[in-house]
Length: 180
Image (cartoon, rainbow, N blue to C red; front, side, top):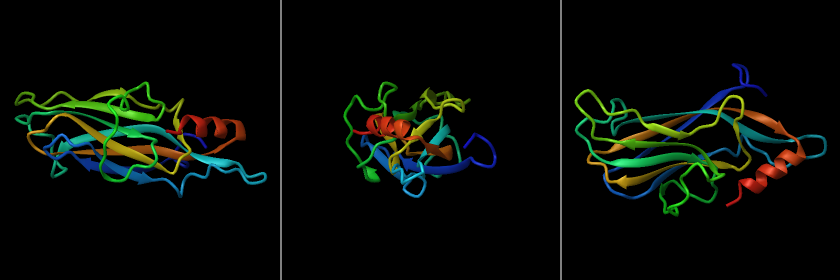
């Protein structure tokens, strides 16, 4: 499969931050797109994620976070199994570019001027040339508050992806690297 209109489709999910410092997550089930078992001549399939788009807006989901809001968080999409949607408790050294399970991530700091807050800082993202290929049955959007938000925000993510066939060696390598 290639990055083109015929093969690429979109998946999306979202998480509301609330006003506390609790880590929250939304699980996106990929089981209908991923089959890591090669059967006979049929190759295993993975989900190539080419681009990840983050949108951070107010808790109504239609406006930017208010300029008067304060708070800071890190959000990321991860190929991590075993989490459920809702409250999670990840170790401190998980949401960073050195983690093989991290697909894309942004930092957000509220509290700008009346002209608006600075855009979120993207610290990791896949590319069209080198997509992140998921071979597990879920990806998870995680929001890790650093400083509690004074007003709730909604973190929305859209993935541009395509199903890809994988040879056995590539599939085995991906299965090893995507294990917690």
